[in-house]
Amino acid sequence: MVRRFACSVAAAACLAGVGAPAVAKPSQPAPPVCSMADIGLASGSCSGFFKGNLLAGNPANLTAQFNALGAFSFAWDKDWQAVGATKVSPGDIKTLTYMQPLYGDTIIGIHFGAAKGAGANGIGVPGGGTAFYRFDAGMAGIEKLVLKYQGLSSAVIYKTGSFVQPPPPVPEPATWAMMIGGFGLLGVVARHRRAAISFA
Image (tube, rainbow, N blue to C red):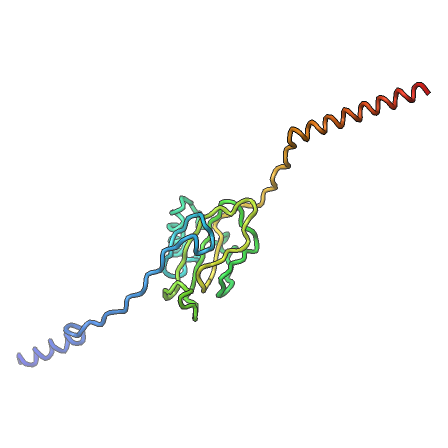
């Protein structure tokens, strides 16, 4: 009876995995740390990389995006409809071309996937990673970003400005002087002609 009990306990332990050697899962590489060089710019700030694709409208991803954008002191309203409308999925390329130029203070999100054959040109993480970037696109605007990593999966725009026509230039003082002198000369000529006509 004791022998039967011992066999039963041993069988239960084997089924429960007790005493079996533990098999360690291979560790997943951590995503790299983002930098402005990722998108070919010298200045600005970034947040990420975060593991996986966060650029989606489900509640978990909306919260993750909101938290990541908080690094820029940007209070996003979680309106995925507005952001989703800007989503581009151009495929595995290294140049991101926007349909609308980006102006002024701009915030974008980019997901780099685990592209086949990207090798050292990819971010090297299964499932890829997402990063968020804030930069000044200036008044001239930016239409293209040259990407450091291959495997672009999708990109969205959270914030950008619009083109503002610069004010017309103010004439230089010398231009004003020439203009006033020209009007004065026209007045003298007109007066001289009027005087010549009245004597004839």
